[in-house]
Amino acid sequence: MATSAATRLLAALAGAAVLVLLGGAAGAVAGHDDDAAAARRTMEEFAGFPASDYRGDGDGGSSSPFYVDSDGLQRQIDELASFSDSPAPSVTRVLYSDKDVQARRYIKGIMNQLGLSIREDAVGNIFGRWEGSEAGLGAVATGSHVDAIPFSGKYDGVVGVLGALEAISMLKRSGFQPKRSLEVIMFTSEEPTRFGISCLGSRLMAGSEELALSLKETVDNQNVSFFYAADSAGYKMHPEELHNVFLKKDDYFAFIELHIEQGPILEKEGIKIGVVTAIAAPASIKVEFEGNGGHAGAVLMPARNDAGLAAAELALAVEKHVLESGSIDTVGTVGILQLHPGAINSIPSKSHVEIDVRDIDEKRRNNVIEKVHQSAIEISKNRGVVLSEFKIINQDPPALSDKSVISAMEFAAKQLNLEYKLMISRAYHDSLFMARISPMGMIFIPCYKGYSHKPEEYASPEDMANGVKVLALTMARLSLQ
Image 1 (tube, rainbow, N blue to C red):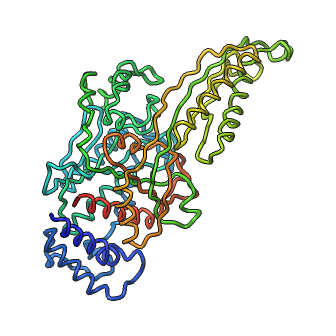
Image 2: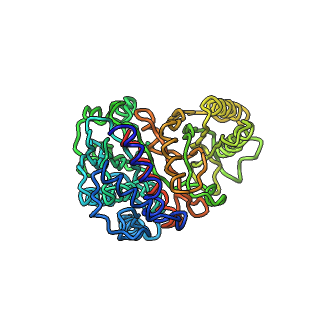
Image 3: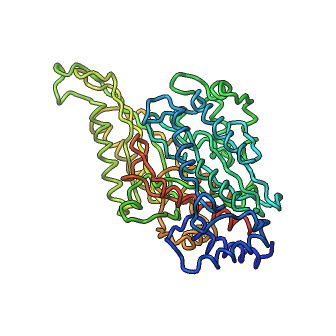
């Protein structure tokens, strides 16, 4: 398709057809009948959409090819949430568990209904592809994850998978014909719940040799190996097959992930869409102190070497160093603090701390990590305890959204007359690793009070529909380039 043709198609699709036929995001538009007719003519000429197939009345309802099936999308979200190892309204769906396998089967069923060609790689990343007219070109991909940490909600990641499938369905209903293939990916294990590795599937897709090697020795807290767990879920593989998961940099022309914000900014400011410009650089640290322990009543305070107080002091040091960074984008969390033996009348002889530090500036984040390390050394000396471990588990670089993808997302939001905000993501996402092999972008939608990773997590049908529309239009625009 020539550039001028693509421009005409997208202008029509994004203008009158989207505003009027996609659901009238901004309300009624004067003269929409003429605009809609022009859009149909453009679709007919360049996208193979016969005007006789259109039976809509311009209100964006179910008789129009341009609408989001919000009821259907919510029904799918609710059905997927039923595959859970914890009672509703919470969701627990851990990698390679029976519920995870059921969820995978459910997603593949929807892909099959949409007529997508489906494949799975060695670790269970699932791909549903709509072949474009020039299938040899790099595809435009989207997707997210459906695994869920214990007692979490039903929208995290899921909106980016089921919403992506609805975006494909909407484009198919419209008669749109992609030039570049469009692909929906369900990533394996974005959450680190079972094996302590976040974004396992997308890390491997991005070519992580380090991860491929470490998985040979990886076990969960029940001492079940990664390969045994994968095998029990139907993914039988030899360790060397992990390299088959790696992708080349020209496999995808672009990747866009739709996701709830997992923070309160969009809802608080009344903004419908977040256009993500960068994903913060995360780092995870494991720290262990060893002291002498003893009886809580018999050992006097001056004689104590308390590993628990060493951990508590380090937790406060993390807060201090993060605040001293001078940037609101620097955040630090002590998410795990465990004491041994864990009895009320026993002085802790061992402590285990896990720390999360994030920033969009890698150098600034690493500076905080170094200060935390120095504090751990000083605390161990001052309290007479042993710093038996200070290990950086991962120290990933930040990811910047690609300017061309940002431009396409902004274009879509503008044409839909949806107010949007340029913002960063401080949460981990598979997009962080997809950025290593493809131009990347993310679309955020508001979620109730910014809640996530808890049962109260919620996104309204209207906000999900807005996200699906922006995603569909962004994919269509990039597909024609």
